[in-house]
Amino acid sequence: MSREFTGVIEKRGDWYVGYVEELPGVNTQGRTLKEVRENLREALELIIECNKELAAKSHESASVIKEPIVIET
Image (cartoon, rainbow, N blue to C red; front, side):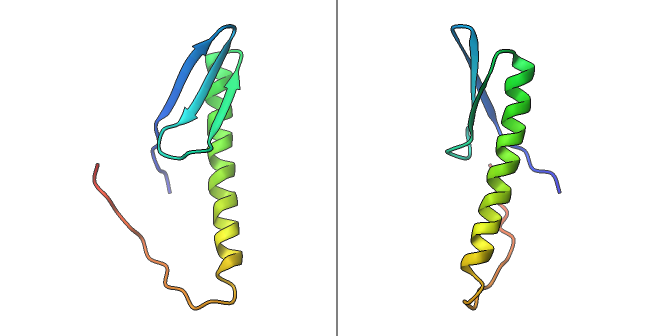
């Protein structure tokens, strides 16, 4: 499954600083645009994976309903 997010990248001195607009906490930096883009992808993948694992652990002893939610923006 693929999803699209918005990466925001700013030049600050000798560094590029990036974050994902839709998910607070996905932040990174790099010396080049290529590096900051790669770092953003990796950070985003790790945050999503970690959030899924944490959610699964919190649902182990509970009765939950999981269903897709689709929005149009």
